[in-house]
Image (tube, rainbow over all chains, first blue to last red):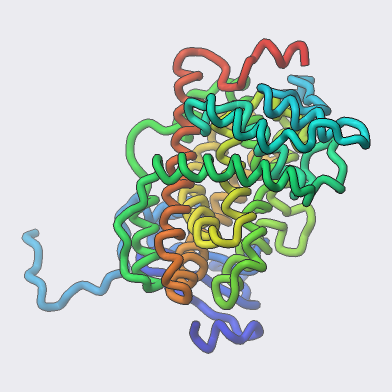
Length: 81
Length: 353
């Protein structure tokens, strides 16, 4: 477990492999106007694939779309277009 | 919005389903002389000799539900003093041994990965990956009738009116970061500090919205053995410390197969005109379980295996067992509904109950 997670007072963002960003700690999640989005739970998952129906929160849709967070191998041959 | 109706009034006393449960219920509701108590272990052994498949055996599964119920205090009519009664604990142990044998025989544990957090999480995500094609959740979303939605809630109520409780048995049985992860999930399950947001309570609101009795155990008598087996398996894993890996794996698989189906369930209730008071439960789980699945796979199951590598097989067994039994429950419902039958047990009985 990393240092950020050890401090309850210090917010943290955990990038989940092939999944959302898990946010812990006291931070406001705001919309484009700056209004704070209602948050009912302490730990939230932010959509990272763009396909969630309840953005900014994750709804698990990334599992249906084949979303991946792997860094592409730079030595790999480009797929044909 | 469909107006609530009085439907299927719940029972206040659980009915027996065979020789063993009859004796057990007689002992638990009988007088202070405790007649029959000492016969329970041998009655359990006798009941097991005639069992075809313990997962579908009404007498055994309702007996287990009652015995576990003594620890939760969830079922009406049984005194607190029975909880650690040696003959009852012995009887439970006899039934659990046969229950576990059947689960070990049926459940296919995936090939074991390296005992690292990342490898275990990846294995769990692969094991629980959504599959295309027909499913109970898609049927609920698109086709289920009002009557079928009520049956769906009744069947779910055995677990969901006590949602999260079976996994909470594991809290003192874990240590370190796996314990922290489990508590982080359970804190949310129990409302994140707001009693009204407790998931079991939100589900009770959904039941009331469809005119159903939200008292725990009110519908036990109409719930088939396989649904009771699903609940009993969680209690069995949770209440046996040696199976702490299995209960952690179970929770992981449970959370990892929840967000997407719950969206479909909510859609099914919306399709029939139900409003937020009814769909709140499902919508809450779309969002909550997308969080919980990450914590459960990585920080609970993955970290537990990394810290206690000997639990690797147990964690994956628990996860696979969750999926296997869930499939059997869904198959039962699907098969009944496909044939335009009730998925509840002995549907005539409910009228006279």
